[in-house]
Amino acid sequence: MIKDLLVYIRPHRGILAIGGLLGLIGSIAGLAMPLLAKYVVDAFGEDRSMAGPLIGLTVAVLVGAVVSAGGTYLMERTGEGIVLGARRKLVDRLLRLKVADVDRLKPGDLLSRVTGDTTLLRAVLTNGIVNSIGSAFMLVGAIVMMATMDGVLLLVTLLVVVVIGGMTGLLMPRIQRAQQEAQEAVGEMGAVLDRALQAYRTVKASGAEEREIGVVASAAERARDRGLQVAGWTSLAGVATWMAVQIAFLCVLAVGGARVSSGTLEVSSLIAFLLYLFYLVAPIGQLVEGAVQLQQGLAAVKRIKEIEDLPAEPVAVAAPSTAEPVGLRFTDVVFRYAEDRPAVHQGVSFEVPPGGLTALVGPSGAGKSTVFALLERFYEHQEGTITVGGRDIGDWPLPELRAALGYVEQDAPVLAGTLRENLLFAAQDATEDDLRRAITRTRLDDLVARLPEGLDTAVGHRGVLLSGGERQRVAIARALLRRPRLLLLDEATSQLDAVNELRLREVIAEVAAETTVLVIAHRLSTVTNADRIVVMEGGGVRAVGTHDELVGQDELYRELAATQFLVS
Image (cartoon, rainbow, N blue to C red):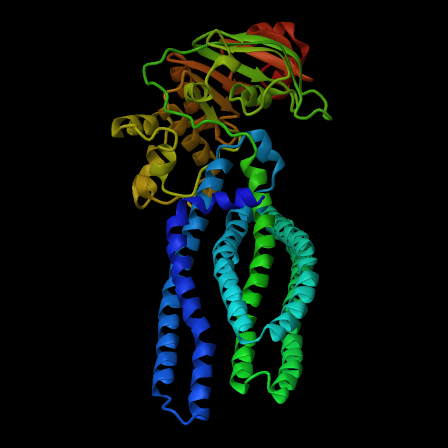
């Protein structure tokens, strides 16, 4: 974990070295102060001029302050750069993760790792490590200067510091465990709050505000309790450091006073030694603080590495606009979402030729949407074969495969931003003519004309300023701009009124003349004119045919059609 932690330092090691050097110079200036104070006392006792020692002391103070300030600024600046690099790397990994991995993670916890855990890196990599190196130098320098004053008093000091320091070291593993638990609790609190915010209207409509407030408050209390554990162990380490210096002071004062009385030690040397002893407070405190921050950083790195170690997918590229439509084939496909869960597909087999309109119908839970998830390779099937364009789906480079597909999800997500940004989300290189054509085909003309700033109007978080039908048409237009070789429509007309459904059926028919369209439909009225309809039930395919053929041949399809008043 230490090695993983140092990876974040490597790009900034030059600036960190400069900052550390400035801190070192400031430390040297600080180390000179007690010695200069001794000269001031000696000059006073010998009735000599104190101007020289006082000037030297003043210069040491000023130089130490200015140089230390410069070093501190460089450290803070580098810390921000480290945090930026860590966040970029983590976000890059998050957006490349497999869908299966993201589905089992909690969004609020992921946000906590990007924000809170990366922030901890700044403290541990600047104050925790670099400042600790400077503090170690100050400590060694002070010990050397103390040794020149009196070896006996140095042994007394080291004995006390080492004993209490060893006791403090035993606390560090506990601090690391407590810090990791605290960060996990904060992530859990974020996940609980994210759940309530994602279903905000449902919470309001259900009158569940108080209950959700209680759930979030309970998570916040658990985070507080974990934070108190960290504070407790950290405070104990700090108290141990303070006790080490105070006990050492009492021991040095007692032994040093006896040595002054016996004439083996000068009063000025005892004063300088005591000053150096108090000078140990800062470096010892920083070393302990650095050790605590190191434990916090290790806990943060562990949580960050959990995400970075997950397998990533390559980034998709734009689809070629002149590509021919492709067909697909499922042959005895078996799929389950996890080993301990039942199979969603149990030997699914069907074929979709290039071009034309094919529909997947059937009751809920039949495995229709899973067909799309497998085609997009959000998940990998366990048995059987899936071919797209005559090639096994596993032989397609993932960016090339997804670039060939246009996918309209069931809930038709719209992102925060302008209408233009949403339409061009999957086709950044589309021209204005392409954009206007897609708007016209999906009947979004009225919406664009009604919006105060047209295409450049912000649509709100998750497209809240648009109706459900408008969001659905935006999602379809976005997919069409991609010029897909295979267009996947999952319940594309579920939120449209009868007039717009009819218009969209015309659009789908028009698109099907140019490319392959595979649509999932519960409303059979949208697919009665499909070239072929695949009827799914219980994770398998029970019938394939046209609307008229299936009405006469398949009981389930006939029942579905009858309930929707398509047949008597």
